[in-house]
Length: 190
Image 1 (cartoon, helix red, strand yellow):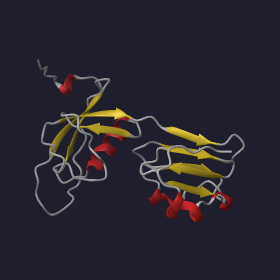
Image 2 (image 1 turned 45 degrees about the vertical axis):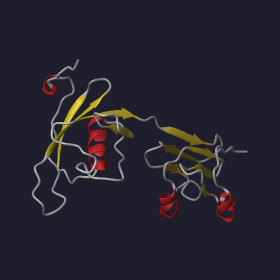
Image 3 (image 1 turned 180 degrees about the vertical axis):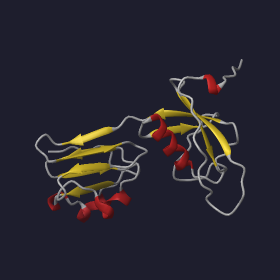
Image 4 (image 1 turned 135 degrees about the horizontal axis):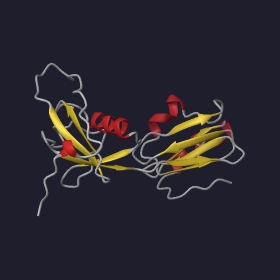
């Protein structure tokens, strides 16, 4: 059995303007329906050449939620960094399900900085500029962060590949032993 929903009559329904063209090709825009599990939906009009990240960002802005994971009608996760809408097989009128991914926080009770992250999103830090900021030299290594621990002046993160990235106070620098920190499953602060 299948049910047909008139998206325009659903609570929270709104259509956003099309995005600007990414290249010189003339492509018919796609209307993609993005729905939360709560049945709140939005129709987004995007070029087939738009990156999946643009669809995800527009949905996050509309729903006012960070770190949404998008799934196609056949249940496949739409990875944000890999492809364009046409590359993942999205067509005009397709429905995508958005699931909010919880944010995780890391902080030390006596520290002067905090860190928020989600598995699919970026790591965001705030507080003491000298010890807690990620900076541009560290940010590229913080991919697929699984866990973060905080000391009073530094952070350590386990990434999706089991590597460990440390930043903050120079005493928390792990670059000397980074090659030995592979396949790490858990980290603890002291």
